[in-house]
Amino acid sequence: MKKWPVFAAAAMMVAALCLFGCSSGETTQPSDSSSSTSSSSSSSSSSSSSDNAATADKQDAATDEMVLVEPGKLTIAASQDFPPFENLNTNGEVEGFEVDVMEALCKEMGLEMNYLPTIKFDSILPLISAGGKADVGVSGFTVTPDRAKEIDFTDVIMDVNQGVAVKKDGGITSVDQLEGKKIACQSGTTGYEWAMENVPGADVQAFDEMTGVFAALDSGQVEAVVADLPVVQYYVLNAYQDCEVIAEVPTGEQYAIIVSQDNPALTKALNEAIAAIKANGTYDQLVQKWFGA
Image 1 (tube, rainbow, N blue to C red):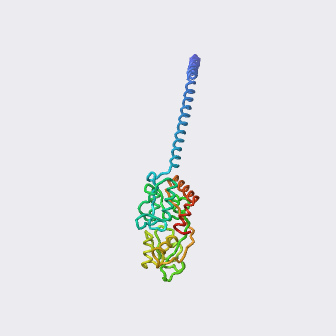
Image 2: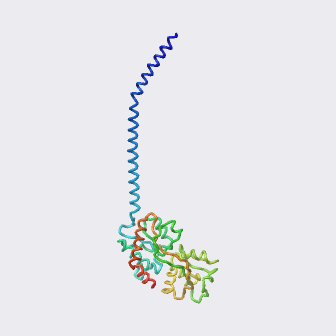
Image 3: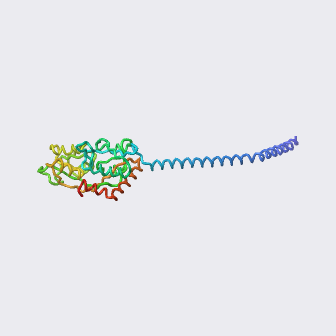
C-alpha cells in the first residue's frame, strides 16, 4: 500500500513534464496571434482614421461650397411693397435700393439675379431658414439677436431709424401724443416691436403689407404709422401728401441680407462682394441715387 504514493508521485512528474512540453511547444503560437491581432488592429485603426479624415475633408469641402437653389442664379425673397428698397414699378418690375445692391452683388459674384414673386415680410425669414426655395432674403431686415438664432446675417448694408407719420392737421405733433392711440405697423417688423414696447396704451395693429399700413392711416382706421424712416418718407412724399412725418426715432438699426445657417459659404461670398462694392464706389453711387445723400 505504501508503494502507491511513489507511483503516484512518478506519474505526477511525468504528467508535469508532458504538460511543460506541450506548454512550451505552444508558447510561440499565442505570441504570433497577438502580433497578428495587434497588426490587424493597427491596420484597422489606421484605416478607420483615414476614413474619418476623408469624411471630415468631405464635410469641410461641403461647408466651403456655396449652395444655390438654381445653379448660376441668386434667388431672392422679398416683400415688394417696401419702397425705396423694393417696389414694383408700372411695368411690374421690381426696383429699389436693395434691388440695385443685390444686382451689384450678383455682378461681383458672377451670378444672375432672380427675384421671386413678392412674399409677405414675416414669411421671408422662415422661408430662408427652411431652405430650398430662396437663397437669400431682403426687404429691410434689421439685425437682431432673435433673428440671428434662426438665420445668418451678412455684413451691414444700411443704417436706419424708425419714423412716425400722421395725418396733417390731425392734432398729433409728437411721439408723446401717441399714447392710447391706434397705430399701424407692418407685421414682423421692428417698427411693430418699437410701438408695442414704447407707446403706453397704444392699440398697435399689424398689416401684412406696407400699402395696407398707409391705407389704414389715410382712411382714418388708425391715427399714426410707425415704420423704417426711409419707407415712411417715401410713402409720404410720393403717395400720401396729406400725411406728414412728425418724428425720427433714433433706434440705430442696421439692415443686412439674411442667409440660411446651412450655407455659410454663401454668406462669406456675399460679404466679400459687399466689401468690393463699397470699396469701388458702387455702393455710394446707389445711396446717392435713392436717398440723395
